Image (cartoon, rainbow, N blue to C red; front, side):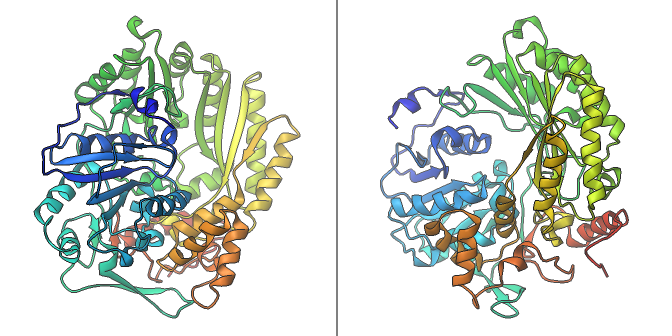
Length: 543
């Protein structure tokens, strides 16, 4: 890929002129440019770094580079997808940097990382990073760079110890996991003397949320200007990382943040994306629609992330249609009222039907629903309820194209369902839904069950997983490769089932217990107990 990819960029910020003693930094996204530049988090952190005159910043992707400085002192990765770890290791090797932090010397840059994957559970990747930033970058990045400046001339170990004192900065090499046995659960994580026993995720609490810092036709979403409308989600579905990990629910100020950002973006493009886990729950969302519906923006194409089902009204549908969107996505998880109560999904089937009818009446041609199989407490009867609901929706909104995308439940750290393993029956349940729905002309799109197993392995993994990840990088990213690696490491770590399918007791230490999330474990257990009151057959027995 040539430099022309960078010449297509419209920057919405002014990079600083680096002074002569600026710190050389590489900021990487472990995927192709077209994917990385579409990541709002990557865009914003890059702009924050590039606007500092005490840094000289180059960008690194798997297929291209932009202005890489010689002899960088810091090299960072924004990590959004679990399997991108393969690209992280490849990029480190490409830059002649040892992939394990313990093998690096003063001659190598400090490798730092952040993003949702590392904030949720960095332990499987801990041996590859010198520094992990836990939480929101708005406050973390300036503090991290300022602290590094103050110890820039110190040796590597002194730098890491100083950085470990900063809230939200996790130095994995200064925390040693202890296991009950080589193949048993973790028993504790011991910090070295002088560093905090707990590292607390950092939360930005302002009302100016993220907005694109660059617009380009070379992005996966061509020429889109993205603006974050809300952060977290007030619904708090029991399995949902996007809600629990990013608490509390925060909204952008309409007048101070959203509208000025949109006006800035629409000066360079006619494509607008509203991002957030629950965009339509912004206070004043109707006023935002009115703003977008003004005649001056008739030619703007609008995209909206997944919206809360019971907020889909005709006005929203018509606004989307008038701005070039023909489809909307809603997350329903299940057609079973009981399962929705279990996961705290505050929806009635009547709400879902009304949303679909409103979408059709407003002129949308299709609705995509997100569902899940293998949710804790789910029975085959609940699966039948999902199939029945889809048929009911088809009758209620004839002519509307309905798609059900369905994944397997994956437990995530810092959520009430982190103690549950993947239900081994989930793959069969996906096939059951496929059989029921495709024969009735409903587009059913299951996600890969094997990918769910790999995702769970990484989301619940401890530090022993790193050696497994190194092996599978050379074998390929199929489930068979992971099974082969487990076989090779037999006796050195627990089996695959321990990480993926086993329900862990709530008094068992977790690999991430030394990393403090938004809610204490006692609160998560209360939420779990509440969920289990709705289950016919809870798999966990809670004390």
